[in-house]
Image (cartoon, rainbow, N blue to C red; front, top):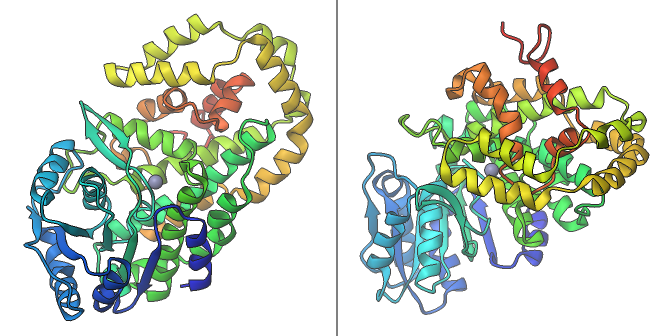
Length: 449
Ligand SMILES: [Zn+2]
């Protein structure tokens, strides 16, 4: 673990003040708690599984440090805890009046529930991670199902995060693999930021960029080591996930860590893809397959010389907002998603004059942008192989989608968020449909085998 790198990142973070990731980290929970929450009592929040893994170690460490302990709140271990708002209400009820700092033991869902519940009772909290399964430990906001759809609810990141590498290495293989996929997705999310930057839509922030991208190639190397239980591979993965979360705090937006691959994933999450599996299909596994999809799209686009784009004919074919809105509505089957998509698509729609200016800029910027993208990206085949080595799914079928559904995602995911990505560039340059066509045609990356 590059402690200097994390220390540097913590200086720019708004919520998180301390991160301790090391072998035997559980034994330091008490000391770290006392330093960051002097004189306060603690209340452990876990589910039966995570309590079984790290509950006793955490409790002992807190007690040894003289921290007063309230009765722990432990969710059932089965069925798998789901990130729905009623679980937050239950936890808020249990924690209110305890006058104690929540110490959440768990990973994605448990952390999200505790994060939001802590915020609702007005407490900062501490997280003891049990799996390197996503980059949300050090991120603000909680991904929760409320009013029938998944949404990101406001709440600060934990004040303190502790991870015990011995515990992380022992986590289920699929959880570690999911964390790897979430991290590898920063290859395409970085590319998307380069695109938005070149078109003057969202300038690259040096700090926010560096925190994720400077170490990325190093963090994602040797994915087979994760399956072999290699401590160093786990150390690299955990550092990458922690840094990714801190980058979002520093930049105050998920732009640093989330691009078109996350839009695929969020669409599938919103539609409940794989929720009926046991355990449910993870965020990371969706992001992984989506990263392959986006890298494959980039390959089609990079083959083209967009500096020669026929701007007049593209602008002439550009639809009015009313047409776009009708199309967006036709692409969704769930009311909540449809309304959200209309809003998000409307926020990024430009009229014909706006499009002309943007495309003229694109033609001028393309040679430089293409060079930067080629440096940033890995090929779709490389990403697929790295994911496979880590034990992640890499095809639509493995996550429960047939080719037609998967193909439709390219256009559908474009609509659900106003954040500018390669999907927007392709759409605005009027090459999205032809590129997707090429991907699924014989010889294309997604050709039926
Ligand atoms: Zn993610």
